[in-house]
Length: 177
Image 1 (cartoon, rainbow, N blue to C red):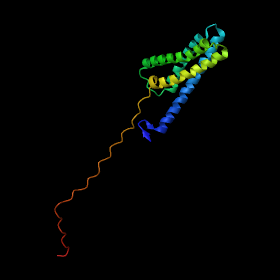
Image 2 (image 1 turned 60 degrees about the vertical axis):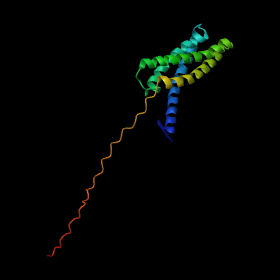
Image 3 (image 1 turned 30 degrees about the horizontal axis):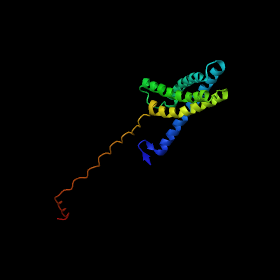
Image 4 (image 1 turned 180 degrees about the vertical axis):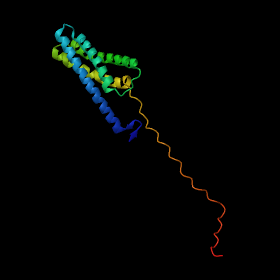
């Protein structure tokens, strides 16, 4: 069962490897995000969503470095300005998704205690992560086109057989004359 980009099994392995790398970088981003969020919440009087936005921006910067130099280091590196602009744009959409969940829980339902804030922050991160994974791999860190295997050397031309004569060969003369 072969496809243009390799067998289905190879493509599945590549996807699993990509998800694992994305998860490693994202896991670090979650720790940074929640750490900065809780640090701001416990040391300042900023409102919960403002603290969350600041934490998300710090995590986005951390994640860009992780994605570019670890998870997607094998992807195209041309057009870095375009890449960064797309990353910032899709990250901003992810920021709205993530903090929209927290905003709804805090101001829509009144769930604003420290535990509730962290739970809904985490749910928002998870929801936005699905969008980020799709957008980053599809638009920001595009896969390089598959490299075609080197062309095989042409086979040497077969040796030509000597042409047959159309005239009959003379009969050998007897040795006793």
